[in-house]
Amino acid sequence: MKTIIGWVVSFFRFAGELGVFASRAFRDLFRRPFEIGETVDQIFEAGLRSVPLIALSGFAFGVVLSLQTRSSMEQFGAESMVPQAISFGMFKDIGAVITSLLVAGRVGAGIGAQLAGMRVTEQIDALEALAVDSFKYLVVTRITACVIALPLLTTLLDFSGVMGGMISEMIVPGGMPAELYWRDAFAPMGWSDYVPSILKTVVFGFIIGTVSCYLGYTATQGATGVGRASTRSVVYSSLLVILSDVILVKLIFFWFPE
Amino acid sequence: MSERGNAQPAVLLDHVSKTFEKRKVLEDVSFQVGSGEAFGLLGRSGAGKSVTLKLIIGLLKPDQGKILVLGQEMQTLARDKLGEVRKKIGFLFQDAALFDSISVYENVAFPLRRHTGKSDAEIKDIVQQRLDDVGLSKEGRKMPSELSGGMRKRAGLARALALEPEVVLVDEPSSGLDHITAGEIYDLLLEMKQKRHVTLIAVTHDVAGARKFADKFAVLNRGRIVECGSFQELEESDDPVVRNLAAGAET
View 1 (spheres, one colour):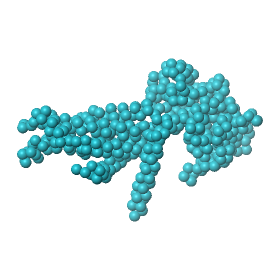
View 2 (cartoon, one colour; view 1 turned 30 degrees about the vertical axis):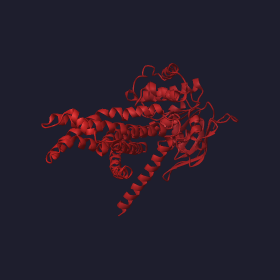
View 3 (tube, chains in turn red, green; view 1 turned 60 degrees about the vertical axis):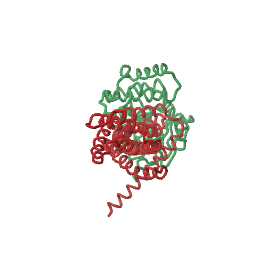
């Protein structure tokens, strides 16, 4: 019983501290200095360096989705629907979630480990001693980078997925030519299929950035703390992304009815 | 205590106490350091020496008492004002705390880029000068991970001096260093004191080393100042802990 109570207390403490941390980050976003140089560096780190991983993953996912969808569609003689199934699947939801999970793994773990390392080696104290607001310099810049990078990376993964599906369709027996595939993939799509999903990734970016920065920035216990911050950054931000997706999908259906 | 009578002390701690989760780390600590003085805060590991330095620069806030640095009460300053005071303080951390993702040169240039409007050429000259001062003129391109412990300390000192601070705080200058390298660091501190006339506060358990550069000493034991004065006064103290520390310096 005591363990359960302790777990519940720990959970609410974590949630409360994370909420305070997130609100401070949001408030400091609009406070000078804006640390534009560091933000650009972090966008490069979180965004540009994730491009190969995202593009390749999206492509592979598109190929798999195409093969799976085709085998199902063939049973109903609806192979011509494969391009639409892939593009809707990628753009409406799966692309956003996959990108967020990949970014949580690559960028979230990196942020958690880096900030925790800086904390335990007194580099964050050194920043403060050099009259630099470490929260603005390290935390706000990284959260901003995640918020900016994630929609762009999601768009990249979506297109890579559709591209992967196209290549697969061009190769498989009975597949369709590229031109036809491309036209069919995007013909029925409108902005309302793309925009809500992309807006959702802004929230996912904020979650990944905030959780990872919080766990890294508040790390303790030396090298063990660094490892723990890195692991927890991935686990907690992935979990929160998936849970928040449930709520966001509901909201999307409410604001953008079919 | 400062001998400069009426002059305002560069650093003053007035009945300062600090507790971490029920553990009293500092209790009613008071001392002052005059401008241009070199002050050695001595004590065993865990005596509260590093906490004292972090209180002075405002990284921690005292539970009780008052801390004045260059006439400013640190714990009451707004962040902007606190930043202005911190620009006048150099801090050499125990393990140097160099930013490990940038080179030694960039570490020293960092405060100059942040807080001065100097051109790249001017910054280059200043950084080179600071690196020359600490004997690292050829190590600027190296990453902190490529440096030895002594070199890291030197690089940390170069960064601490980048903005020509009025007060320099040094946390355990000899920790993790062999006898010879530690001696070189002490020589650097002495040279810095003589050439730059900065106010120097160093915390250390190495009394013999501190004697090389410090004019005044205070001994911290279990969070309390048990003696404050010249080295001779430490030797003549009634407190056995102080006498033991002073005797250790003689051997």
